[in-house]
Image 1: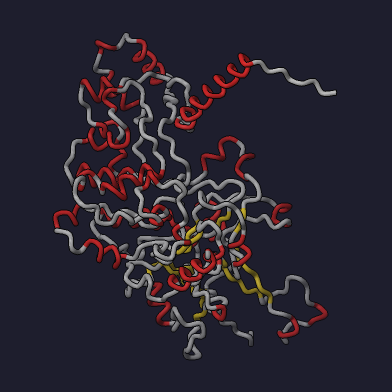
Image 2 (image 1 turned 90 degrees about the vertical axis):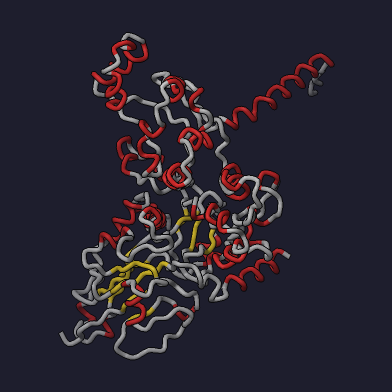
Length: 285
Length: 250
């Protein structure tokens, strides 16, 4: 019975126009041509969202807590005629390719239907919410996530914090305790305060594009990350999605050769809200 | 061989009384869960300031109208008035206040209303709505959650401040301006939306996602449909209650 109800509910939530008349749909676009892999976004995310630095040993045991990570890919020497395989090392001179990876805020999120307590669900503004106080730590969501961007608190990492350091915690964000799942929230605390400020300024249901920056976007030295409202026709992120011909509800984008936009694992039809712009390399140089 | 415990009727009675007494005390301790029982550094007389002298709450709690938190005034604020009040200068509490001032130390007040981290509550929205938009008296508005502060000495937690208590306003009364009028969207909020009962009577709230009759969150169009037949006067006063967990939890 419960399964039947869940499936019914799930199919209704997947109607593509379910939240069509909501004023917001938060989306992102990341230009990999601009990304230098410096890691400023990761650092900013740690500072903004009260993430614990767990150290090398915990990372080795899979307890890492970075909501945002820089994925690094090397061009394989055999594919690259410039590099002699004999001389190839673990860190070739060139060929590194960086991809910042955080929660993709899927519209058809695989993590949502598997949660036994509905701690993760879809908000009307197209965010993939994680309600910490409802989470019981079953870790189904993390196992069902194709991007592996959900992180589980195996320990109370903040307990050992020496005295003055607890003052650096962001008061707007929960300090998560042991036994719950967490992930990138698109800086929901900033979204809420931006909406609050818009309400004060008298714009109901309209946050001006550019007034709201996520922590990673704010700190990106090359401005590779653009964040905004996809329902707003004039927003920078919407124009980016349009000019690179990436559309929601399409898992195979039908587009011309010279645009670079794509979404990670589009073929899984999870409908991510993050678009990446592919890196273009000069292979002759 | 195990020795059999010989329990007389009188000893049984003593145990029963003890257990009953503990049962009575348990709810009290649960009520006062996050409030420290230690005395405040200075027994601040709210009854003098807010009651007798009718100082506006927001004269000291300055940030309530423009921030999430209401704020505790700095010592300088106390001194700003009290240096001109020589009549009470020799009272022990004022002496203690001036000691903090001379030592240039903040008063280590204990927090009375300490919400858990995962609760997002903003004073600003409530103050802007009820005081500045509706034009209600400040003490009445603050008193909705903080009780009749003008009769207190030190601050006390007089309301439960649980989620169900928040919802009891947001789902049923829609703010006091709508009391007695039909509640248009009594089921705006989850998880109690999964049942038809008023929030306080829901014994085991089920996650709304499991109930096909009630979607996880309610669409704006549905809310519009539910409220469009209402007269404009009531519609303007409807609290735009969040219908989404992440409005208040994060």
